[in-house]
Image 1: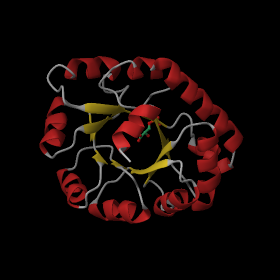
Image 2: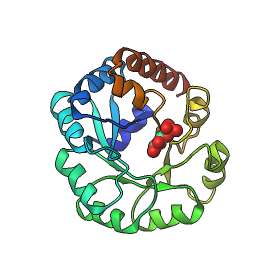
Image 3: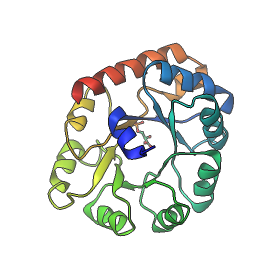
Length: 210
Ligand code: 3PG
């Protein structure tokens, strides 16, 4: 599977913070039922690797990646769990190198031109623009698309139904990341009905925007 094309087709990357791996399967099913066939499971909780493993086994329709991958150990743990891609909030050359050696698709975070160049030099061509709204939003992406024509972005941070379409309208945006359709409070409460509704709304907005 071409992960980048698949992400581009979906246009959305839900950023998931899961407190307990037992919540992974109902969450995955809610996303699949809503037509949101992707999830970035962040290593902000110790349940992340187990959750990725469970989703890979139990929700084969879902494109499952790892998020908040901050060091080489987490790269290895994410790959061992079956993550299809790895995301980080910033650009760490050591982590990028390790992910490349391991053959993983690594999407590091950037929010300045210098970081874009450092990531590009390390072989990364799809970058998480984080924190998107706080760091200049759509105007930043339009400005950097002049010099960095071979780079593609996954803006994340402060994206919501109100501004999603503005980002997805940009050709350099592959998909938008965000937690608005998978709020951690709803995951912890097991409210997968509301998550399914939010996810379905996001899918409809993304389709209309593309
Ligand atoms: C992330 O790390 O990607 C962010 O926490 C997601 O940002 P959001 O919560 O503003 O969507």
